[in-house]
Amino acid sequence: MRQISVFCSILLAIVWACEPISERKQPPPSLYQLSQSDLNLSGEQLAKGYCAACHLMPDPSVLDKKTWTTLLPDMRKRMGLYLEEDFGTAMPEDEGVPEGVYSKTPYITPENWKKLEAYYLENAPDTLLLQAKKEVPKLGIPGFKLEVPEFKGIRPGLTTLLRIHPQTGDLWVGHRFRSLYRLDPKNKFKQLDSLPTRVAPVDLIWNTPNSFDLLAMGKMDPSNDSIGLLSTYSFNSKRWEETPRIDQLMRPMDMEVADWNGDGKKDFVLCQFGNHLGKLSIFLSKGEGFTEVILKADPGARRSIAVDYEGDGDLDLMVLFSQAKEGISLFENVGQGKFKEKQLLAFHPAFGSSDFRFEDLNGDRKPELVLVNGDNADQSQIFKPYHGLRIFERDANGDYQESWFYPMHGASGLELGDFDQDGKVDMVTIAFFPDRKQISFQNLIYFKQAASGDFHPHILKEQLADNWLTLTKGDLDLDGDEDLVIGTFAFDQLYQVPNSPWKPFVVLRNMLR
Image 1 (cartoon, rainbow, N blue to C red):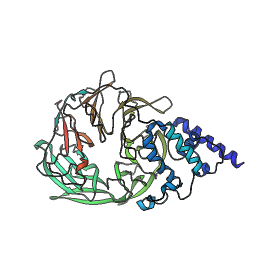
Image 2 (cartoon, rainbow, N blue to C red):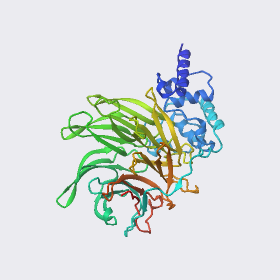
Image 3 (cartoon, helix red, strand yellow):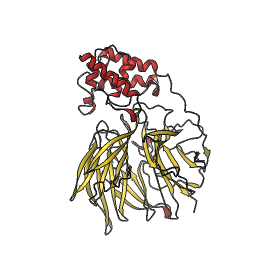
Image 4 (cartoon, rainbow, N blue to C red):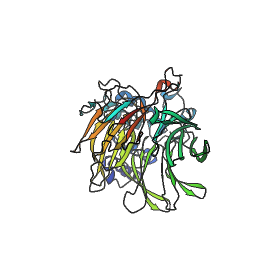
């Protein structure tokens, strides 16, 4: 009887891994159920069962043979299986990995592991395919003028935050080394102010012209530390005063502010990306403090968007998750501070989800999901042909289907807007991990939407070989059109003193007005 039960679980796992997201009715079996099977399963069947138990199963073709060779041993260790070849290597606990991430109980036999490993290595390509054929970007971004401000001071170009004040046009620049600067774009970006921050700032939302909430992430490198912080800054007399609001955050990346429980006070949704540990939390206002509600206790939360998805009058939440369990989820507001999760899209662990938006691109009042995937800061740092910019449209069944894809190595940031004010939404993407060998360097692409609804790519005439980490839009000169600011992040200045003037960002000045 046990064998029949486990066999059914295995079959469910295989079927589950192959079904579309909208049709999955049964959860995958646990690793324990799989480990108790004494069936003679093939490597592919084992892969479908074991991989589906944790995340969307990756096809062998998503990585090359060499990369799989380096990745698979870590997957094996996570299932609690250690072999002779592991002797002399550091144990997870020796590297600071929290208990529970790597199982202390083997959930796969050596024989089954060999079959699973062989399935990936035998079916993986020697090299990944090249990017699919795409429209070649035109040189020059229509309607914009490039500016590269240079400052006299010598500082590392490690920009972690960019925001344009909606009333003054002032540019606020966050720096990895715990600083926040206010610059005047109407006066050659003269420094107006500087604020020390406890850790690297990553997100900012204004309350009033002289008050804002600031999210600081803690360590930028992968970390399980809980030193992230949310504070409110207010300008009083001649200085800024900090009021800590929420601390001990797990490497937070993004915040969304709204009144989710209808009490008239603002609540905070915080994407705590973490590393091995992390979570998505909503902090509901309660008196002078907050009550934390954990919406999902998994690492990798990247961006959240408040939206009344069903049009029922209350705010729901859309969230992008990276890390292993990649995808976009809707957290439906069911009242009294409770939310129900529905996964809208799921991607394999090497997909590299980076940023997304939910916006009506074609004016049909049906918002599309716009996604960039190109995060390559993992254990598979190779150029992947499936990295780029995507559009997903909602079909008659309520499911999202990919309708458009433009390949782009290292795509990491995204902004949308009707920059030329022609009634059509345009798109801008940046790449943190670009291919520097491309003839036309594609670390920033502007997609202008034509009257037909097609998107046509444009790149800078000036080939700036920078790594772009941050991107924002806003009206710098208060002339009624939106400008773009792109932040630099110079890897070579992380651990050595720079020897050239500070160039923290470049500006694409909108020349419409």
